[in-house]
Image (cartoon, rainbow, N blue to C red; front, side):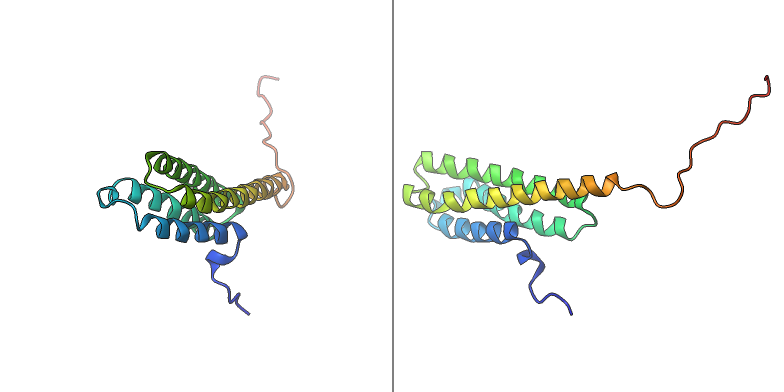
Length: 146
């Protein structure tokens, strides 16, 4: 029976990043119009990218490739942290909004980092498995000079 839960809600990390992206989109609605194509767009893209990369990576084959997408997601979360901090320091993001978004950002980072570590371990375990079948070593032909 197929899993009734959408794939983007399969991991706690993707749920946390999704909730963070929704909160960021809501918080940036009141930002200055002149920042629509600048800081507002950058922060929104970083927030959406964090969850989108988890979802895309989960659809790929194997833990090694998934891990690569999780690394990209962690990069997006770092970019988002910079954008929110910069916005706060410029007076665009209120202290109240910062205090509301900051715990969501921390939680998303912790869960995504934990998932990345788990995928690294899985990738290492799968690469440590011996190949199927007997081991075949290259055998050099006997030298004709001997």
